[in-house]
Length: 292
Length: 302
Image (tube, rainbow over the protein chains, first blue to last red):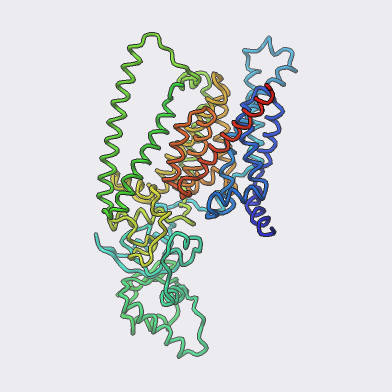
């Protein structure tokens, strides 16, 4: 029971946390219900029924079961005809507002063709658009993505380092890189092959694939990231670097990319050169590329 | 009711999805290469185009022959609307153009929880369908779920890339989202006609408010505009912003054939349990409401 309510709360919260369109939806529902004969009753009833089904935790659970419980609770909100209903409510409110304004203005009928009517209309639309603005947001885009500075819309620092790789036409190269580079590498070129993909770092993607990573690959990922637990003694640290450098060489990785901070480790540089046969191929402000 | 151009475009896109699904499933189960899949799809598409042209010519002749036939018109011709309400139409158009440029061309794509582009890239590079892990580029060891393999959008994007030579990022994060956004506005233009028949001013304002709601309503991952602006190439977006509203509209207009087409289209782009997706449920809810209403009306009569 608590689980059901928690899931419902999280699903509803995601819809009502940063904006008030759900509240606006309910206000519009009430408004259209009270408006009477002028509205499309079927549409209003449908919207009301669906809102009820979603807002009641038990029926929401039934909807999720209908969807084989494969999708998260948030997806049930897709059923709600939010956009059409809010826009419908806005236009109906506009009609009511202009009617009310013109009714009060006794001179209206005499000047109906004048600018005053248009001014009333514009005022009503402006007020409704302002309501939609105040109930929503303008800054969400900036929080989750950044302006693209490259033509291919890949982040600049990642594009810079990927541009440096030499990928022969029609051939593939094997690359091991930090997560932020891995994220874009396969989008940059389908000829880049990697031991691990974005799903190593982004757990949500594991639902798309049955493939799992072996402990060797997880270790390699952590080594590239510099996330392996630091050994107590320098000798052990050196052996660790040596083991992974040899693993990379035997697996035939053409390129290894490290962050500048990670590459500043002398043990790493020595192990890569001595046991992996890797040399520094290129550098950017943020990354160092090794190849063999 | 006379079919509008918007209706024809939406139905054509749904039919294209259906044809792509046929080619995709054929390639998937017969283990054909991606190139072969693209050829099959192209042939089917040409067939559909030919059928469309023939149908158009025949219908055109029919209309010309029947003198004085006046089809039922509930919409106001776009040119007349533009002449009567240029300010609102230009404002709405400007907002739509801004949304397209700002979201699909000026920002880094939002790739979280999305493997569509990698899947497309992999299809193009390996010339195969779902044999290679799209995230690593290596051969699959365990594969991926069949519920995802049967979905057609990645294959459609890959065919589009192959035809046009455009980059995967451009197609998956600019072109396809833009098409889906415009389709969504087309669907709502039909809504405007349905909600306000013969009221041009209200139709225009309805479209303006839809654009405003999209613009300011992007505050949560479940909002329509979030899906359109950040997950534009997803099947989920096509379902939520095009198929669902269109299916509901068709149900309200008692145009069940088109509603069923939407159910089938949803099954092609989003995992549903044997087609029982949100669109089918929408039809069910509308039918349920109608049934209850009929029963209440009968009781009242008795």
